[in-house]
Image (cartoon, rainbow, N blue to C red; front, side, top):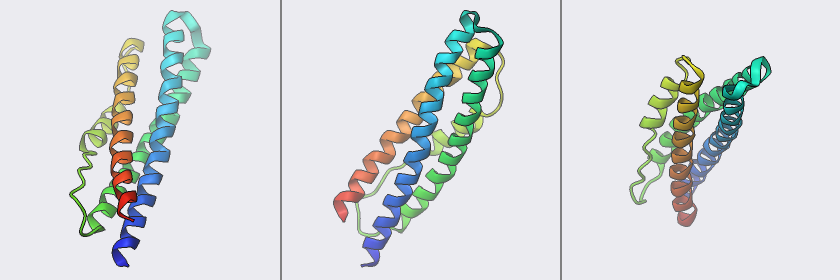
Length: 137
């Protein structure tokens, strides 16, 4: 019964992480589109909108980073299961790098693409492990 409780807690932690990761992915997608518009001469408005989306993405990535740490902690509590490999180290490192600031619009677009790839990878990992946990119930 305790193991079932731990599995359910890990699933809830996965769900929390996925909410933040999906939100980050959405904001990054919007920021990337606005960045293209900005580079094509969108002006002040596109710049402000893009940075607003990036600020929101940054908040969601920070929340996701914390949620992924919590998820990893919950996974350690689950007993008698196959070893789960949640590699959030790259995401956590990347999230810190992403928040360091931007130099130019082209660099911003590159960082947004990198962030999108990192978020997508984290989503895949969490969903895979969550599916394994669901099968253990």
